[in-house]
Length: 326
Ligand code: PBG
Image (cartoon, rainbow, N blue to C red):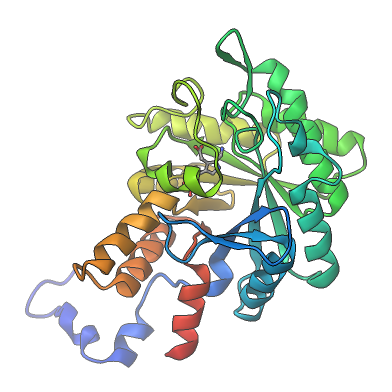
């Protein structure tokens, strides 16, 4: 490699056009997935205080936001459900007329081209707020698998294109794949939250999804933040069980894991820019401490640069709109 003065990196930074020509990583609306929170009722938009711009929506309102996202070139939405009633076992999660199932049916009827991804988990639906069945104060792995598989199946029956298990029980990808295949849904894809860390950055989401654990924490099933090798093992394991896309979550604090998973697997990788990562930028912007729009764009670009093909972000529509404005 040539050194100074033969090589002057600044030559290609002189103008906007030059910088664009040699830019290595792109971020476009097509790379983004918009999470949406759906609840019962009609005409409802309930703001989430800790996530500016994010609202819990009734199905009719959800359709409007999804239509807006689609018109901005965002290819997919990721649905989280707030059930009218929770119970010990999270039964609403697999109800045929459940809130997510109804939203999926409406979305596929109104916007057939839009890819509908559903979060598969128990925490939004259980009174205790844990992601699996609780027995004797413990989150039990194997008895949870069939619940998750039934929930995923109910989403597939409603028309979901992709189901996304976020519970972190061992073996759930295989259980879901098997059930979907047995029931004739072999074309429905699985996006597994493969390397999902026990993170403080999920704080605001738990308000949005009303899913905070009522006792203890999630450290017995979500990953230890110190573990990179294990993140890779989790991804390989999920791929082996039938995952089509693997996710690393959170994204910003785990860019190294995104990189390693992409390098090692070559599979489509998704980074989840989570609620706390989103809220932190907006809170600082609100104080005038940084330019929120630019900081958000830079953060999302870094997730792509680390190797993610897809990025889940609450900022998806804002990003697409700011591009359209440029
Ligand atoms: C539920 C789930 C969580 C998130 C996505 N699915 C929260 C958790 O595990 O506590 C977090 C998303 C975010 O913070 O934006 N299993």
